[in-house]
Every structure is written in structure tokens, then in C-alpha cells.
Image (cartoon, rainbow, N blue to C red; front, top):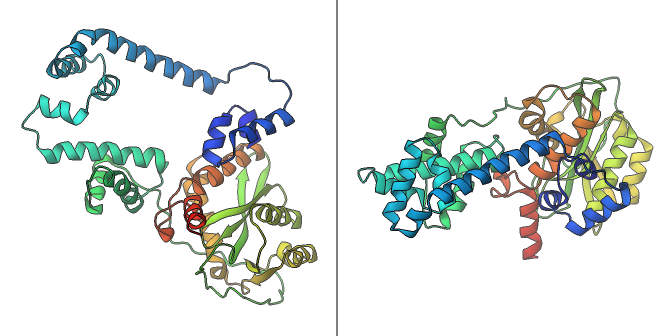
Length: 372
């Protein structure tokens, strides 16, 4: 998180909102780990500031021109919006936003013959597009968009069917990033002793911290070659609770992941942690760490990746929705920052999951803890 702040990618306030860490805590970290800042503005910040300045200039221009109509009747304000949009000085959405005019009301005034259905569709198009691009970050399909839209519309006493959402998405050419049905890669090197499979593909749970699953996946970079992401997922909430990213796929990588998970979870009862039969997980150091923390180790059967489908599916989604949507990462550091953002800002805190009632993992845990 500090890297995101130090490199000018996120402000302390943004990190606090997106990752759920106290604003004052982040500032303490920054003061403790960074020298006195040298004032500079990144190209990205300059572009953002220029864009905002242009928006503000446009808003001021609109308000200056609209001083007369604002004091007059609402119809005069509608006429002002019509004239300005016809002259292509400003678009209707911007004019209505700045002047705080309901866009649907304006269109009803503009063309009384426009049906209520058409006005509703236009409003739905705007809402669906916003959910797709902002909340869903272009990965949501119709089911998840419908779930988010339903919550919005309930506040104003409206409903919308999933079929209508699908029609509007087709019209707007909004498509989720689809993934081929997951097929695990089965590899076997030498003889591996079978270990006990406590999980036995029973992925259902009744509470947090009953069953954890873990695995390692490969992430390619141009400069540093293959890098390795190790994660631990709580099957009850689907939340990633342990994470490490490294240049070596060794025991130290998985021990760091376990340590991260233990720092994020209180140990108050026995739990199962399920992994494959990789040498990192069968090492004496890893087994010792699990035993010290009262964790039972469950193993996938040899040549049966379906035994660890929960974490395998998460890694497949991560690659589909983030890693494969861009060129190969330039180097280890850039990959590390992007993967961290994808997991802890988007996946854990923003991405809704059908299996937990279309809530985010963090939202689901907050609901559980609030009801406890």
C-alpha cells in the first residue's frame, strides 16, 4: 500500500477508502518510512488536474450564461439547455448536472411525445453503463449488474428485470470478460506420497475460518521472467486473507502467505488449510508452522486439481479480469502493484459474488460480524 502512495498512484484518503485502513494510520506509515517529500507532480496527476480544471471552467461558463434563465421559470431553464446543446457548446448531461435539472424532466418538456418507457430506458442505460464501467470495472455480466441495479432502484421504488438489463447491455455493446470453463492442468513429477484429504471437495462452510485454501500461480514479466503469486482464501466469505508475491517459488513464499493470513485472522479454534502436494507445502518448515498455529493440513489427491477448485478458480478469474487484459507486465514491481490493487481494492472490497448473495467478501464479513 505504501508503494501505491509513494509512487503517486493513490492518495492517503483513496487508500483509506479503498483498502479499509484508517487515514491516520496510513499517514503514520508514510511519515515513518519516507524522507521529507520533494514537491513534484506526476504526468498522470497533471492530466487529472488539467481535466478537472477544464470541467470547472465549463461549469463556470454555463452558470454565467444561465444567470438569467435561473432566475426565471423552469421552462426558461429548459430552453437554455436546449439552445446550448443545439449550438454544441455543451452536452445535455453536463448542462443538467451543473444546473441541477432532472434530465428526464427536461426530455419530457422537450418532447412530450416521448414515452415513459423511453425515458426509463435512457435512465437505465446510464445506470447500467455506470455500474459496468465503474463498480464492475468492465468485468460484470448481466447477473451482477442486475443485482447492483436492483439495489439502486429499490431506493426509488422501481424494478427492472434481468431480461431488460440483457437487452440494454446488448444495445450498448457491454459484455463481461468471459472465461472458458476452467480445466486444471494436471502435472506429475516423480513419486509423491499421498497425504490425507480432509477437505475432500466439501467446499461448503457455516462460519469464517473453518476452511482455508491456498495455491501458487505464475505471473509473467518481460524483465524479470516468471514471478509467483501465493494466496490463501477463506471459503466462507471468498476473501483473500493471505498474500505474497515473489521471484522464487520456494517455501519462504508460502510461509510469508501463511504469516499474512494469521496476522489478519484471530486464532480461536482449529481450522483446515487445503493445498496441493507441492514441495513448498510438504516441507518440514511449513508443516511445523501449521502445527504451531493449530491448523490441520489437508492435501489434494495426486493428479486431481479439482480438489482445490476454490483457489484455482480465484486465480483463473484474476488472470481473466486483470492480468490478460493488458500486455505482459514490464517488470516485477509493476506486476506486484497491479496484482495487489486487483486483489485488495477490487476483488476483496468491490467485486460482488453470486455465491454470497451478491455481496463483496468484505461486505459479507461485515454483515456476519454485525449480526454476531
